[in-house]
Picture 1 (cartoon, helix red, strand yellow):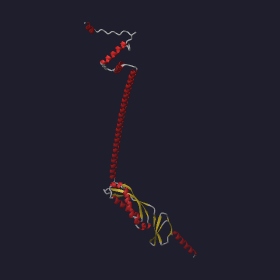
Picture 2 (tube, one colour):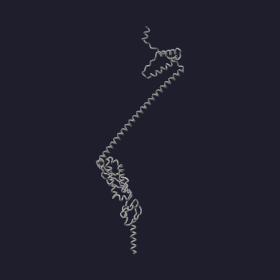
Picture 3 (cartoon, helix red, strand yellow):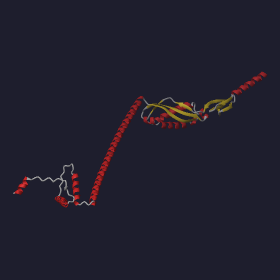
Length: 321
């Protein structure tokens, strides 16, 4: 009896230990009692009633990734492309996830494929290639709403690859090459235009500066000549004033004027016309000087006799007759 009791006790202990369940972090266990949903165990230690309770499903609450293989999708303009998607989701209700669908992950994959076909079927090729964000947002909204009854929360959907047909790729590459060539030509033309404009502006500025420099030089020369004339007139006026202050009479002033005229004609092929009255005035001044002995032009002591005028045969003969 003792051995039987020990054996029974050991068996009960083993059964009790076998029914102690530890649920890890970020996991939940769905427990059924006699085939019916009983409870959802969260992280921690739990005791299962032997032979009556059963763990129906072990579920992770971590975010999961569903990577769908490429699938053919037809656009609005009848272009068939291969598109693959990546769906990020996590379980928020373990009971719904267990009893909502037979295979929730497979159901989510098929739903993502049909939703993608519906959205891309409303777009053309160019719109599909340039509307990734729009497609991602629409798919996320539709899948999240549809999977609520399965206990799944779809956080985001991403289009991983969009592969058009080979001939479409070749045409697109040619188009892009032509566009790049056009942009290069435009950039070169704009560069040549800017360079020509810059050179023209430089030439214009240089001509303006040269004209301004020539103008300033002419103004400076004119001002210098005017200043020189003014100074010369001032010097002449000062000389005349000095002569007047020294007591020079009108004949001396007249001779000074003739000297000035002589200097003006110096070295030039020019003729000076002297009025008759001016010559008479000078002669009278000279005769008066000779007669009075003031300002005599001859040297009375050592000066030789003036050279006698040469005889004019023609005039002399007329006088004798």
